[in-house]
Image 1 (tube, rainbow, N blue to C red):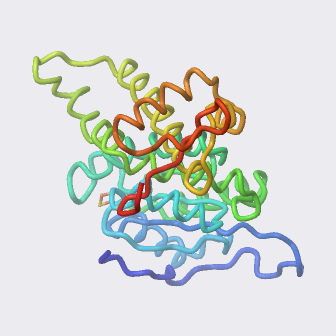
Image 2 (image 1 turned 30 degrees about the horizontal axis):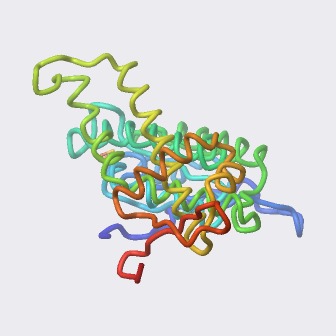
Image 3 (image 1 turned 30 degrees about the vertical axis):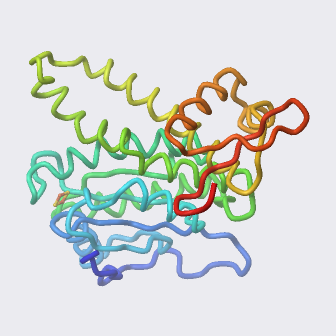
Length: 277
Ligand code: FES
């Protein structure tokens, strides 16, 4: 990571006085160096006010923010994440923000699967001259996050395992490849020169996200304890025939192993990479 962690200069505090004990959301703002970070600076210089809940982090381009990083930050307990980039067509690295848009779409799907409100993540294009817009976006987003309440991931084991599964799913080759190829498939077409319908692609990505999430959740839940298909289905609230289909695939890929059956019911345990099984 080459990004430096900064606090935006000249920040004007709108809510200096906070009542003790009153919950205030913690929001991380990843702002691209060329537009949004400069917009935040201008906002401060022009003395527009915005809440102090946001901790700005300067990144070179919005596309540096991976789904893995976003999910990790939510796992650590952040209440909201704002991604600020250059307007479409203005990215300093030409196509970076097109990818950001596609990745945010995937991130929101993964958040929804895990049980974290997708509204806790917001993407906004703010140029260097839009100081006032920056103030408006931060104020609005802070209100949204306040209305959603605190992120309970650290106090809720079930939610934590689902977010960990979403994190694992975001790192699968299939989801990374799908998001990377989406732009080409819609714009240039596939190898046969057939352009795919954006709606069709959206459907494929939604289904792939859900499948990868469920398989990652099986691996997450079976890491410390061998579990039966029925038990997994109940915890995950997924039909058992679907769980079984996932398990067949996970076994084919040597990611999960059948343990000694308990009575007549087989149980499954995740194979730790580098571990004995
Ligand atoms: S440089 Fe700003 S979004 Fe890429």
